[in-house]
Amino acid sequence: MREKVELTILIPALNEEKTIEIVIKKAQKWLEKNDNIKGEILISNNNSTDKTKEIAIKNNVRVIDVEKRGYGNALKEGIKNANGKYIIMGDADDSYNFLEIDEFYKELKNGNDLVIGNRFNNIQKGAMKWSHRYIGTPLLSYIISKKCKIKIKDINCGLRGMDKEKILGIDLQGEGMEFASEMVIKAKKNNLKIKEIPINFYKDKRGYKSHLNTIRDGIKHLRIILKQVEK
Image (cartoon, rainbow, N blue to C red):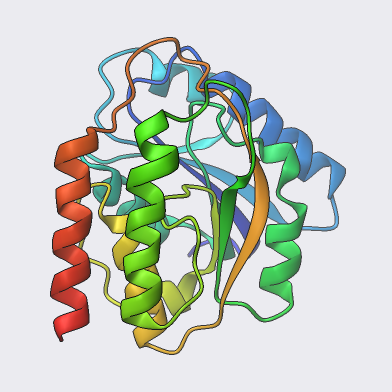
């Protein structure tokens, strides 16, 4: 029987040995500061081949293994295995600061089912590619906003809060980065309450190439958008 938990901080991880301890420490510090909240940290280890899992276990957090690679795959399994009523998810590269998630929790408690960060509020120098900042993400966000009649400015933001049961109920299928767009589209189609809030976005601390493939992932996003809006 799973332990009753109010909040799961969910971190998908693929070869994040340089930063995983940093983000875990920040998440732990936030939970310590908010000790009135029964919380847990869950690492969804997406078949890492480095010391990511070893470091996470050493830092006393729960780890699940997801063999099939893909951002969506890691998050789907993480959401299913979360003990919390609410989930706040964020990447393991320290581009999102888990010490700054107060508003996500607050908006979830206020009755929102999906809370999405808007990175365009404050992007640290070097944190986002020019093509992503001025073309890719704004374009995809505009298309979804128009097609789904929802005001979203940052469809690709990976820092999100959600009501676990509500999100499980919309049957997410995306295996890769397109999972982010699918979540918003299906949430809107299923009349979930969606809230976008400004956040700070920091430079990736791993020091190597991002898992994101601009062209491939952009095409996947467009395909999922067209597929969903046509239904």
